[in-house]
Amino acid sequence: MADNLSDTLKKLKITAVDRTDDSLEGCLDCLLQALTQNNMATSEKIQGSGILQVFASLLLPQSSCTAKVANVIAEIAKNEFMRIPCVDAGLISPLVQLLNSKDQEVLLQTGRALGNICYDSQSSKEQFASTNIAEELVKLFKKQIEHDKREMVFEVLAPLAENDAIKLQLVESGLVECLLEIVQQKVDSDKEEDIAELKTASDLMVLLLLGDESMQKLFEGGKGNVFQRVLSWIPSNNHQLQLAGALAIANFARNDGNCIHMVDNGIVEKLMDLLDRHVEDGNVTVQHAALSALRNLAIPVVNKAKMLSAGVTEAVLKFLKSEMPPVQFKLLGTLRMLIDAQAEAAEQLGKNVKLVERLVEWCEAKDHAGVMGESNRLLSALIRHSKSKDVIKTIVQSGGIKHLVTMATSEHVIMQNEALVALALIAALELGTAEKDLESAQLVQILHRLLADERSAPEIKYNSMVLICALMGSESLHKEVQDLAFLDVVSKLRSHENKSVAQQASLTEQRLAVES
Image (cartoon, rainbow, N blue to C red; front, top):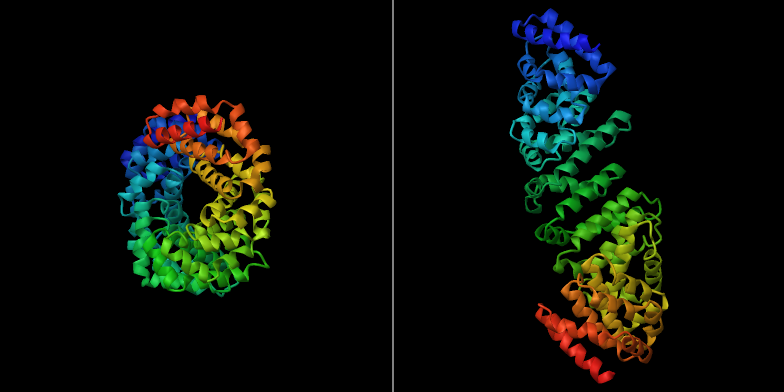
């Protein structure tokens, strides 16, 4: 076989120059057979032979062998190591030109070849961005009537559309209008291939919105036809369209201007209605998408109060009973965004025993780091934004203190900090109530470790010292502080390069000296 293959490759080089189609065809058949038997080894041989450059000259619209050459390229490009060599050999441009062919077999093999070359390969996508592939593909797509042919073009489009430059080219070439038309044609059909096409078209639409420039172009200040059409998907009865609509809104909601415009124009009510339709039947993907959209919309400060008064917290809390980690994760994120600097809402939620108990339960979700992290962050946020004694009491009664203490040892500085600030508020407002829990969670020992560790960030050191001072009001915790020789650690920090840390070290040192 190996000798045969070497002979074939040699012969192919010669016949490629003479352009004798019959013998060329024979060589290509041999190659395809060898690829069927051992794709990887044959591909390596082909790469080593320098024949790839020859292929570029064989991809001619009028040649009878073109489909077979494209088929060979499609087969070798199944191997990751062959994708860049295919690009370097200059195969993209002639393949793109072949997309105009009238021959169905040539189209099919060309589509396969292009799809395989750009599959999962960043550098080949960048090469594609410098060709007119987007325009050619959209033109080709508009011509196709048959389902299979459209699917073929979709298969090339989807991996290409992951590149931001190509996303924009596809949008500018009018792909979105084609996709919207497909959705409109297929939305009421229950034929299997129509349902598949509706899914592909709406998924691709969402993918195009993942690029910042393409998304902003389609938003058109919220007046755009595309944005309006996507809005109309949310109240539809088709789950796939509801999902795509909610995901699209989450993508449009990636900057403050868009978020503010959408909230002012009633998007929140539409999303809440959608969530309401999925409380009982529980379509998890739709729940997740709608919550993602609400979470993003709640980021701008001006939107929070509007969304709170629209009743978003009540709508979101209906999903507290969900057992699905992705839904739990987005629910927590949405609530955390909503109460940021909203004292009244934070207090209301923080006194909600059902919510707090569920948070404490999720703080132990060891299998789901995301849910665990978000639950801890929301517990801390309820205290930080409400500064309410009642909230602290509710959290103490539900067993939440130990989780906040553990959170102070998180590997993420932002979470450590949020925990320390919440604990300092607990110590300032309700030390008596929380004392026993703080003791059994070994807070004082943890603070000693944080202050002694050179790797602790300055803000962690600062907030740990603030907390130490606040704990002195409790007899038992005060004793623990004395037993651990905090003075040594703190006095070292007086010469810390960070001014705030050095200042707080002096204050803490005085406090410790007075109290000892």
